[in-house]
Image (cartoon, rainbow, N blue to C red; front, side, top):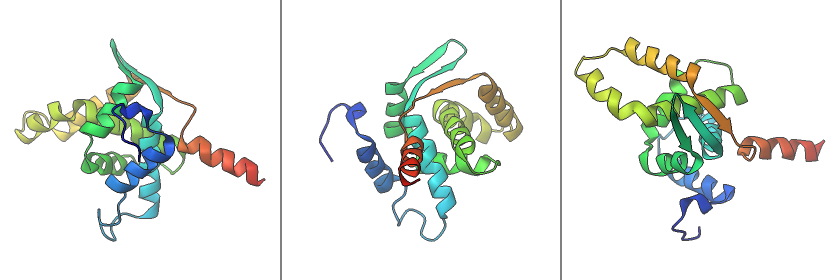
Length: 158
């Protein structure tokens, strides 16, 4: 992988390599992560990587800011938690919903977990906040992603 000081210069292949090394390494959760979960998490991360912009009320998060959060602020447990809490059928819609839930945890998690463990807010409170965020946040997903790469491959094969 190239040594770049600008993390936004990563190509899709380099980003996939980072994902393999950090999130999907075979030693991560030996025998516990199944292929479907891995693919969903992978697509969700790539959807966030290529998001153009995220708006929530007066807050605007640029693609560069999202990428910095992914590379510097995300833990694998947040990724697993986001995937685990989305109870919908597989598909691009689910992957993007996992991406949105993950972003919520990345943005607000530090402000939620302390009060939650101190019993100042309940799990129900967190769910209400998450649902409010999902209803009001606007995600401008970019066109380039692993999803579009897979679709292009399928078109070439047919």
